[in-house]
Length: 295
Image 1 (cartoon, rainbow, N blue to C red):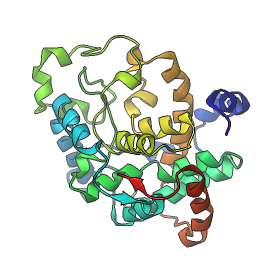
Image 2: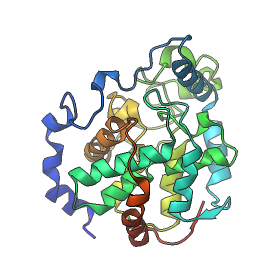
Image 3: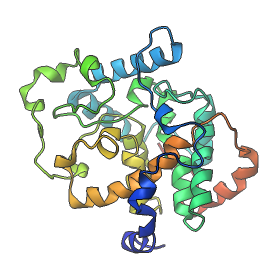
């Protein structure tokens, strides 16, 4: 397996800024300005569902809450399942925070993976990363409310930045807003401490990253980084929180942005032939994380 440095060297051309900022990815089903529309419309059931999910998230995601969820889930004693078994649980999950699609999350998994496969045919680890990036959403089947599973992530324990979705209206009842330790730019952290040392809001990103580490996956570090921070939109797309980042974080951000193109712009009602794709992806699972995992 190529290590991170070799991957960066051999694939550096994929980070051409003109490619990352291209106005409309050729595979997008609609203009990119129509993705991630968080405008408020109480008469639109989907928009109102999204707003209420974020309201609950931003009310309850505190430093104390996150530490409690980590203590609960990071014992990895809830269930055992293969990657494919866990993946197909997502056939019964519609993400209540997503304003773009209203289809089972398993469809999105294959949409993301197949577009990555088309544009990065030689990087099978990247294909598998696309397939499993949202797999931590299985939390929703074991007692977690969706506001503690889905949606954009953000650091707790420091000032909430302007690029957070609904930032001005949704944190008003969050207890941490009354704690002066948590209301400065760095809060409980130090400048450039690195995202490894930042406590993120609890959800599927951090959980899946921890599951993979605990089960000794053979996926490269860059894949784990994509999974851990793909929902951290205020950072990778909003330009906030860079004062907490290390040099490594800023280098990895290029990969998170590359992944984000496929995660976001492949969302559509076009359904992949999942049954036909299963043998290929099962082969990748067997290569990088075989057998039952502890969740």
